[in-house]
Amino acid sequence: MKKKLIVQIINNNSIIYRKNHVDEIKKIYLSIKDKIKFRLDEFNQILKTSSDEDIFAELVFCILTPQSKAKSCWSAAKNLLYNDLLLKGNANRVANELSRVRFRHKKAKYIIEARKTFSSNGQISIKPKIEQLVKNKNERDWLVKNVKGIGYKEASHFLRNIGLGEKFAILDRHVLRNLKLLKIIKEIPGSLTKKRYLDIENKMKNFADIIKTPISHLDLLLWYKETGEIFK
Image (tube, rainbow, N blue to C red; front, side, top):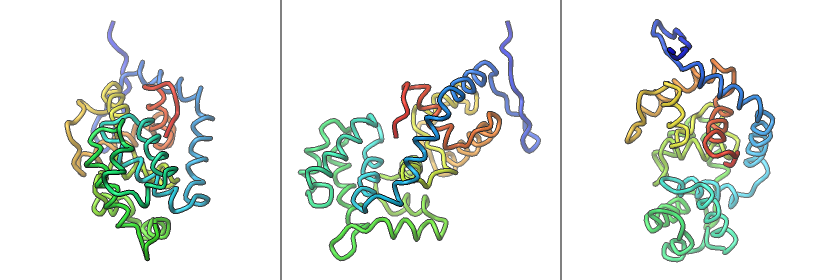
């Protein structure tokens, strides 16, 4: 039996999706839509209500995530915060808290560098900087260029987690695997240049339009499909 396909025409180019996979995504979305909205509402309050230290912990979490499990990274970021090492610990002490995170020594150095980037008069001051970047409409590009350990995936992830990621895709391995399954991309890229990242992000936005969901919802939807939960 031939697999049913959905064909969408964009800019005179045909984009073909597997109908059975699209129907599955739609079904899952209807079942967890309210949970996704609730989680995004929580993210949307972070920048408004959290301290600079808590916002910095969100950035540290995203620095830790490459090639590591999200829950282990969030646990490590919280331990750094609770043990007063997030803003004061040296590279060795920070690395000691990252035992379940891959490349912990390198990432500890990234955290120390990020701390310097967002410090003013000896105090962490990340919220004013982020708010200014949003006004200038260059928050993601600035983070990629100025924070070591942050690429487009990590920058998008951080901004989403503080309520600023409505227009960004978080192209982690869970999302990319599903984009390939849906025929949105032909293969999972070994690395993501800016051009490649933005190209896949646009394709993901087109697919989000098909199933009538914001791209921020689609990210959590595909994460849920892979892991069975909505995390961060």
